[in-house]
Image (cartoon, rainbow, N blue to C red; front, side, top):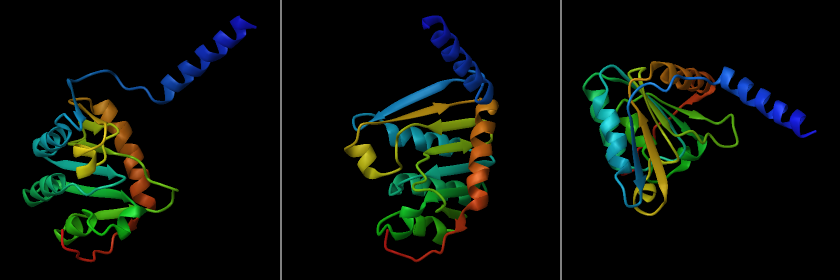
Length: 179
């Protein structure tokens, strides 16, 4: 019985690895909040962009991160943002600000929550972790950011998932609120 269970667990792990495998290439940086530099690491990734940034976010109220995305957009980087439906009614969120600044933004309302939190930068780098792009995440919560540099295989997997959600999401109707 124990051997069969072990074999089944091994088969499950092999199957999981086959569908979600990415080489462990590239340098990795990590940051934590509330006492670390999580926001700064996210901005470092955004500022490094040369061609494109794809954003997935659940909650987004961080003005420094929103400003970094706007700066990237203004310097010609192809920036697109995907957010959870809760952001449509966020009084002090980044959605209206980003949309008013010309950043293409869509809302994923198909799921109970769109809980993804990641960036795909230049189809090569991935920032991910539990970190919501919020001031509360930086100042009060225990959260983490992982930035994986130069791993196109991993970036491709994230990009495929991002594209699926972008396709079924609705364009955001900007309604300017003081940010």
